[in-house]
Length: 213
Image (cartoon, rainbow, N blue to C red):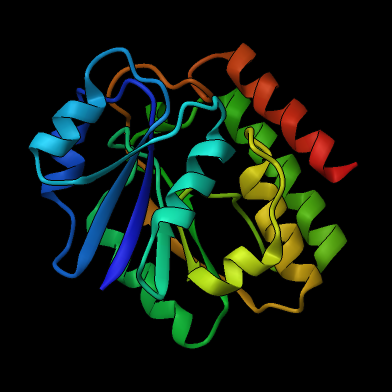
């Protein structure tokens, strides 16, 4: 069994599609981070395990899901239908030769999935990661997998949008092998809180810059 942490803030439209495509053996943990659209109740009705995290922040939701997980391997992914859960086995399969596997997003089929401002910001962050760690990282992708106890031992402290970046930095500092697997990136349901606006992307970059400092 593999646990899949799904941070959720008002993702009612996307939840059914994401949950129905969860592969056999992958247990969704929906972390409701203050939704006002009934996302948590819907996820529970659809059979997902729901964790309520009242402290705002993407990292707060991810950490709450990690603590609640029980499986040896834990995955993380966005719950906005921009990533297909059916790609998770390819990501976890790469753990046979790596400690942390990132799903590197590719959206050649539909450029709407990844606005130019968000793509540029991601490219800069990935370049900085390669410079600092030597890891061959091309995308700070939200779909990823690692082993639960090892992740907890990293001591990730950021509770905002710096969480994914700090995970990679701490993993590299701990000597982990970091690998990438390409995954399709799809147009999300609803408007993204990060990539959908320049302001959202700027906020994420600000949080990540704080982690880099």
